[in-house]
Image 1 (cartoon, rainbow, N blue to C red):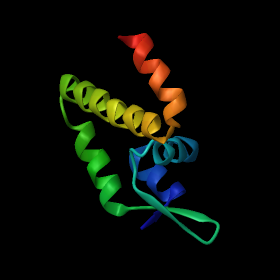
Image 2 (cartoon, one colour):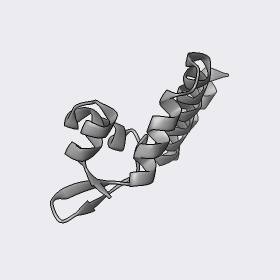
Image 3 (spheres, helix red, strand yellow):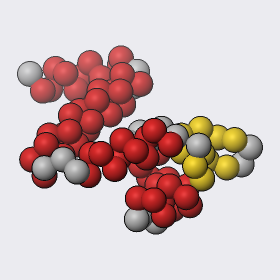
Length: 89
């Protein structure tokens, strides 16, 4: 496990960027006391993703966005989601 500062140094980004990626679920992390600890494997995976050609990164980012949006919609009450589905059709 790495601190947000350590993960930021490894990835060459700010601590806030690391926190944002944790919130966006791009990096796996867990709270240890008051600290957010980032999974070493998640950092290694992020490095590997950066080696992908831009077209593959864009596709991976789009797929991750769809997953996040579906998860967000799943958390909404049915009385909110159902009218949206009707309006979409």
